[in-house]
Length: 68
Image (cartoon, rainbow, N blue to C red; front, top):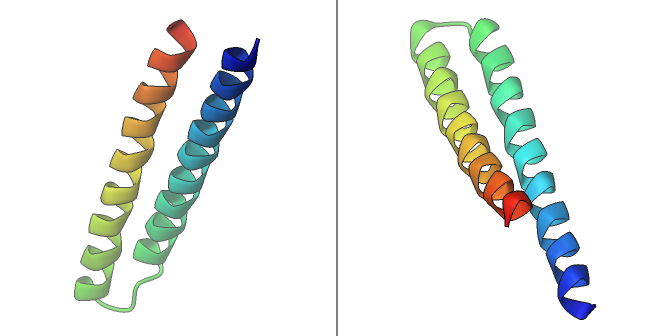
Protein backbone atom coordinates (compact mmCIF):
# COMPACT_ATOMS: atom_id res chain seq x y z
CA UNK A 1 0.00 0.00 0.00
CA UNK A 2 1.36 3.43 -0.96
CA UNK A 3 0.11 4.98 2.28
CA UNK A 4 2.27 2.61 4.32
CA UNK A 5 5.36 3.67 2.37
CA UNK A 6 4.62 7.32 3.06
CA UNK A 7 4.09 6.59 6.75
CA UNK A 8 7.44 4.77 6.96
CA UNK A 9 9.14 7.79 5.37
CA UNK A 10 7.47 10.17 7.83
CA UNK A 11 8.48 8.03 10.80
CA UNK A 12 12.07 7.82 9.52
CA UNK A 13 12.21 11.60 9.05
CA UNK A 14 10.85 12.20 12.54
CA UNK A 15 13.37 9.77 14.03
CA UNK A 16 16.15 11.59 12.18
CA UNK A 17 15.00 14.91 13.64
CA UNK A 18 14.85 13.46 17.16
CA UNK A 19 18.41 12.20 16.82
CA UNK A 20 19.60 15.48 15.29
CA UNK A 21 18.23 17.61 18.12
CA UNK A 22 19.36 15.20 20.84
CA UNK A 23 22.87 15.36 19.38
CA UNK A 24 22.79 19.15 19.26
CA UNK A 25 21.56 19.31 22.86
CA UNK A 26 24.35 16.99 23.96
CA UNK A 27 26.99 19.07 22.16
CA UNK A 28 25.67 22.27 23.73
CA UNK A 29 25.74 20.67 27.19
CA UNK A 30 29.37 19.75 26.56
CA UNK A 31 30.13 23.30 25.40
CA UNK A 32 28.49 24.64 28.58
CA UNK A 33 30.73 22.42 30.71
CA UNK A 34 33.79 23.67 28.81
CA UNK A 35 32.75 27.33 28.78
CA UNK A 36 35.34 29.92 29.69
CA UNK A 37 32.93 32.18 31.54
CA UNK A 38 29.42 32.31 33.03
CA UNK A 39 27.89 34.15 30.04
CA UNK A 40 29.12 31.52 27.59
CA UNK A 41 28.05 28.73 29.94
CA UNK A 42 24.57 30.23 30.27
CA UNK A 43 24.26 30.65 26.51
CA UNK A 44 25.04 26.99 25.84
CA UNK A 45 22.79 25.81 28.67
CA UNK A 46 19.85 27.73 27.20
CA UNK A 47 20.65 26.43 23.73
CA UNK A 48 20.88 22.86 25.06
CA UNK A 49 17.48 23.29 26.67
CA UNK A 50 16.02 24.56 23.41
CA UNK A 51 17.37 21.64 21.39
CA UNK A 52 16.33 19.19 24.10
CA UNK A 53 12.82 20.59 23.98
CA UNK A 54 12.69 20.22 20.20
CA UNK A 55 13.85 16.61 20.49
CA UNK A 56 11.17 15.95 23.11
CA UNK A 57 8.47 17.49 20.91
CA UNK A 58 9.52 15.45 17.88
CA UNK A 59 9.64 12.30 20.03
CA UNK A 60 6.03 12.93 21.13
CA UNK A 61 4.95 13.37 17.51
CA UNK A 62 6.83 10.21 16.54
CA UNK A 63 5.14 8.23 19.30
CA UNK A 64 1.72 9.43 18.16
CA UNK A 65 2.52 8.40 14.57
CA UNK A 66 3.64 4.96 15.67
CA UNK A 67 0.43 4.40 17.64
CA UNK A 68 -1.83 5.57 14.77
